[in-house]
Amino acid sequence: MTTVSNDQLVAMLRAMMRIRCSEESLAKRYPEGEMRTPTHFSIGQEAMAVGVCAALKQDDVIYSGHRCHAHYLAQGGSLLGMVGELYGREIGCARGRGGSVHLNSPEVGVMASAAIMGETIAVAVGSAMAFAMDRSPRVAVTFFGDGCVEEGIFHESLNFAVVKKLPVLFVCENNFYSVNSPLRLRQPPDLAIHTRATSYGLPAQQVDGNDVVAVYEAATTAVHHLRAGNGPYFLEGLTYRWREHVGPLFDTDQGVRSQRELDFWMEQCPIKRASARAQASGACTELDLRRWWKEFGQEIDAVVEQVRNSPFPKPENILDGTY
Image (cartoon, rainbow, N blue to C red; front, side, top):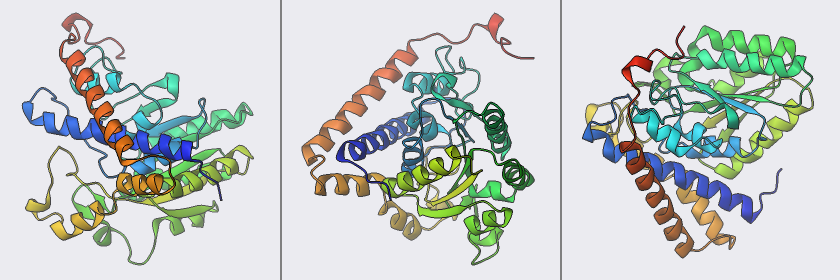
């Protein structure tokens, strides 16, 4: 098992706090009507993104789906680039043309995210194949939700990756819902997702997706497996999104989920748990936590102000990059 130092714990805690603070601020501002893109917030799921990305190197690559904010920021994507994209401004990481679900920052390894179900799973396998052909020690990671397990591209990608022994880490963020459909009504009972992955012949592990240290340790084991040339690895993290599938609100009043269920998972808050662990180990104090929340709050406020004062794409350039 990997030993996590106090410095590593603080770094991961701060990364989760920064993601949470940024998304909570954007969710609060969303009703103002200036962000016209649909948004899929990662609030409650920060440990999966941070724990996995903390185990990667600078030249590794990640791919994501529609719920991509946390992955983008955890891997080092620019907050300015993300906020600019949500506000549709030229300063956005996709020059204001992609919106919330198309974040990218290739310079730090955030290759792509897309809303098409399971699309980037196969693309990540393609990157891993390139690394294998080049005999490079780099790895590719693909983040996806439990709904993607029901797509054909998921099974085709796992099979191909095993056959070719590719260095790709499949990370399933199992938050138990695909839009508004609960997992228990969509997939066979008592059959965990990670056990299905093993049928393709790759090692698979289930982890507490709200424990950032557990996620980091599992991801580190997986990455070592990949770099050793042993083929792909599958990681299933049990976690939970607090907000509605798409949008800034809670959906307990719509009959989708009960308040009791939401309250249970909010008690498992990954930031609350990591904060308690960091304080118990002497890595930080309550004063540090308050100072960090203030720091990140000021950062997102300044970024939003900068974005609001930046230009929209010019109409004559709107087709740049299309083909």
